Length: 430
Image (cartoon, rainbow, N blue to C red; front, top):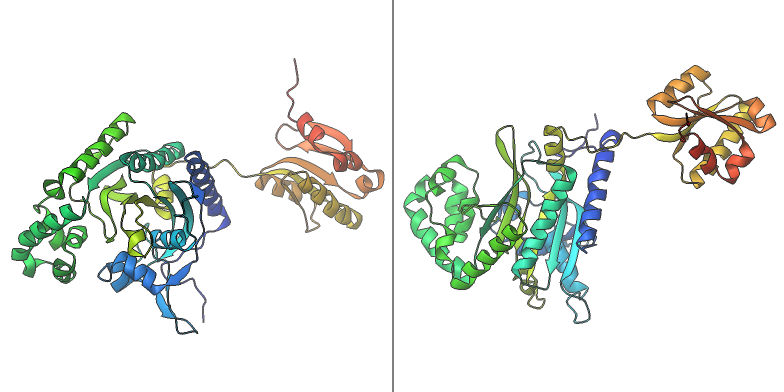
């Protein structure tokens, strides 16, 4: 039997993992600037957590959930999205307590799992940065979170990303819109896809989110939620737009944009980029003010987003963004002989303790072959360690590019390599 990775998963090899680390480090830096703190939740949770959060009629629950009964007879599901877990942790750990400063700002970097048809930028195991801001309802919160995502894209150098904005209104707005949408869609019921025929009676807003060609054509002329907003919802949305304009963040109002999850209300948004003449959503989120209460927590307004890491990497590749510095070594130690082999282990460990990135030869090859390896590893400096160097304690440190050399001793290196390192980078005065 040939062992292979499961369909819809990917190996992140060392040549790519550095890119992931860069995205993660940049996310950590940007989110920290906005005072968001990292949270880590379990990879699997109770099935009920996700089924209740996303809705029993959602595609996530009916088609995509990886769920199973564990050995204790508990119904368990792999995490298909991050918000439900963050909200569960918020309630269970009483982050709503009066002594906790509000809003509570959380972010996470996590793997998600959905059983769907694998395609470009969409896998069964995928990864997201998620952001949740809980405890305060204010248009300024919505805009700050959107601005944070915008800042992240700009600092990465990703271009051509446009902000799509819409609102789902409050409960009263959605009730009025639901009735208008049912009235519009009912005459087309027989022409809708099977899934949308079911959704029409369970949650008609999901029909707007369908990717089936027949549904897309029908909903082109569907009524807009913007025509059914209450005065309060209309005012809230106007404030969001004004704040975005104040920050000079361009946006387009996309009246057909909805959310596939039941818990959203008011502001929703997506960051969209065109790749190979196809629109690709890289980041999406919005306001969800009833989910904490729905899980038996206190009334808690909230706003957040999910940002797909695989999709972001795909966009970076398509735009030929070289956001990675060339990876290399500080020092490569070439080794010749048995005594040198022993001393080399001591030398590289002492250098690593001084925070230098170091590699050594283990294969007892000839020096030219070792020098070629140092070149391939992009080593800045080379130290040749042979029987004579071990016997005398005298070594030469050579810069691999400038060929400049510094003679020193092993004892001096063990006491502190920094002066030698710096000497090799000082430009000669003419």
